[in-house]
Image (cartoon, rainbow, N blue to C red; front, side, top):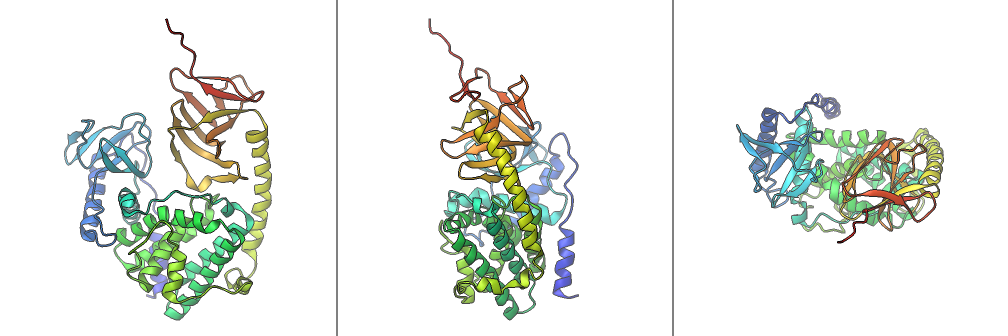
Length: 434
């Protein structure tokens, strides 16, 4: 069987569904997840990043906050249950696939249900294990604004880069691989020429999420063919994402990481907050900058122009959608929710930048001192300066529920008239002193 066919079959094996939803994490399945994590981090023994991935892990059901962990906690929330510890995650602790600080320790947190596919499960677990140690490595950096990746040129050049990376991963010889890598870097260079702030913003997300996704593929999957298949699949599955702004690094990270493994095995040494994975790969392959206008000659990655045409159509629809959001979330009456101690859970594939004002979240769970905002199929604007969340004032009399969103105010909080006629904001009710 050829390498290409093995990659194709391996990709098909990654398309498994998640486990059916249950009321709380199953202790037996949780114990299996913890065993997988333990085997992976013990086999790695800290070699990949110079630190062990082993540590506290919790699996949490976001509906009832039921949790199962691989160890006890310092606050006594968890009780022994066979091989694991179980309890209820206290209110106020955000639930997501991430790393959190709780009960005096840094935990890897996984959401229930977990994937039923063994390879996808292992890759996802390692991704989150990496996030737990990421600050120790100095590779957790402030993320920039990648709004350019929702524009016509930004999206088109990013997808052309992905197409070239996919061909590089599947190439059968070094010469062909080098040619496709050169194409990918040329598209990357052109995008960053058109958008001067793009390099720093893209690099930050590739370090934050791209390295985690690469680590998931590198340590979670046992065979080189599986890793290459995962990286190729990661590039393909992002194409259906409504937005690339916050999700692109999940695709590019594994591709650049695995290509660097082959070309420059010790590339992980000395990484810093300003590292550019593309520049490292160019150095490894001794590929110089593309000449101005050279990108136009690399049309083999979109030979019939269908990708360009599809992106032009999408951009026309995007402009209409942005106009509607400006009318409702900027010019119209809104509820303004200032953000101070914010905890956020969202779908990174759905984020849409709105000019220089902020980002629209069609799916969002946002908690702060005033309560919780839940958006499911609606639209909330998280504005940049001052930092605040905004939803359109509902047409009916109920100010706590609008089109696709619900606002749950904490005890002692209420909505009052805001700065602009029709606006609303939150304020504590006045309490007199006697």
